[in-house]
Length: 368
Image (cartoon, rainbow, N blue to C red):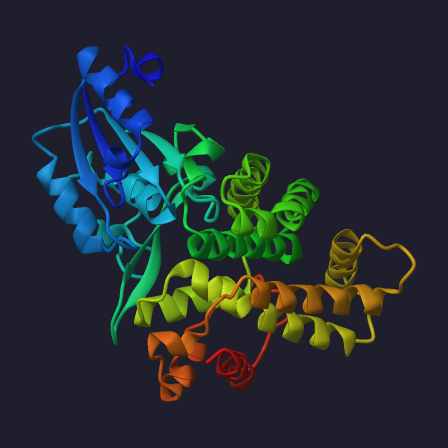
């Protein structure tokens, strides 16, 4: 890292989660090397998914330090936090004013030089132009700070940094990446370019997600998952996402449920509803063909009809959800009385099927 940063900066702000920089000798050596090479370093830690208040506090604390470079090393929440801090330090004001659907200002796109180093394989935030911030509670929200210039200047994707990621986080993160790849593939805004990348990512997930949850030190599987997550960030940025991430936003704004858990637990039921609705249609659409193509990839068979392949996808995801022991929403004390309110605030414009409020409620009820 010193070679990458030489000539770019004097002051470096490093954002981590759970004191990551103290847990790994390689990281400690890196920080020592930076100091030896004349860099001034300051650390900030992020616990959980970042809120606007946390971003504002860290930004204010570091205005006088005036870092030229922000380095975020951690999961998607840490990278999103680093991205937001990088974007707000030059403005020296509250990030809330620039959040989509919350503030009334558009970010100008200026930022500090930003390096993202993921230590989970899920969100693909190292390749996206937005930082997701949340404020949980009755009036809570989960919204993005967004500008095309906020894509990290450098993304260092090293599967060896993910080896110690716990199995349950590996599973939830992997399901998040799988969701992003499949949703962007099915999105009404997809393109041939995003379709190609999404299918490659889905292939890597199919080959390696179960392997890496069983054996976190399987570096081949870790490499596949790191690459799939990176691809998911690229595809979602260019094709958008669907109903599962609509639920992640609306549920995540009200309750402190980890993003990957929401995606993982809702992935099976949403895709089954999508597929059942499509199978009732008389006209064959791009979504039919894409689900069928996904079914061929996942089943490794070429002797079945479209309906079989589509149903195979639904069954495959349900079985994977069970194998990975993805939890139910009831674990987070979400009352059934709130499901209607959540449904009313769940966006799914890019989803291949549009559902009524009661159908959205039924989907969530199945995962309580």
